[in-house]
Length: 359
Image: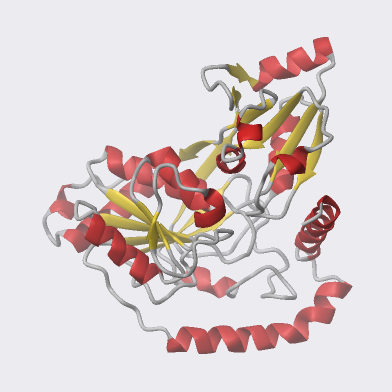
């Protein structure tokens, strides 16, 4: 696909996201189609029967389309549970991948263009077993069959996949909130706001707008602080140092990403005093060297999610201008306590759960 088409698609994607934040003329024009979407979702949910796996299942999802921080939350929760003695595995749909609908394990050197960028990032970051598949039940069963040591499964973005029975549901909300409060296509929601009343807990990511909920909620904060050279990972520089170097030497910086909420990444970089040109592709878009053809910037800053795709192209892997900006995640420990109590009660009723802290 030509670069011009990619730019147009990215512009349309960001324009739609902005449209969904208000109940303006375009949203109102699309609102009648929302009733058809609701009917389709209701029929789909009615046809699904929950299938229980032999280990506890934790689903992390959200109501709206686009990036809210689900994958960083899954990664942090996976790491926290492993630190507490659990042996987690992760299942994902593998959006953007081309591996087909069948459940497949994600190898350590898996191609994100085949398996999806988020599953590959989870596998690379946590080193826990990860499986992808349109059918999360089949993916979970594959994990258990190939890794019998797994004692808890986390589902990345599985809130609407009701066929996989779950013991804990976490819904994530970020600074974009619930948009205009309408469902697709007039708004950004895949399910109505009242769905938050049926999840086990809500995780508020960053400075979220007021949301009226009676469900338990926890806080998650993310930040960027450093950049790591992709071609030579030991080379590390704080963003404050990079901003100073830019002022002194006039460095030209390009911030480049293919994520659900690119404007947040750009804003976080600018908050550190960096002056950046920007290039945003549609979420999950494949990345190769052709995308950066003609870019003469001194440095190119990318997210960890994009880095796993850049690394697959030998030309990008050797490009010393590319620096990865990892996301640091601070999750309320009470959220981990909450999840652990729930899964422990399922895994070993009346035993391990009673020994866990209640904070």
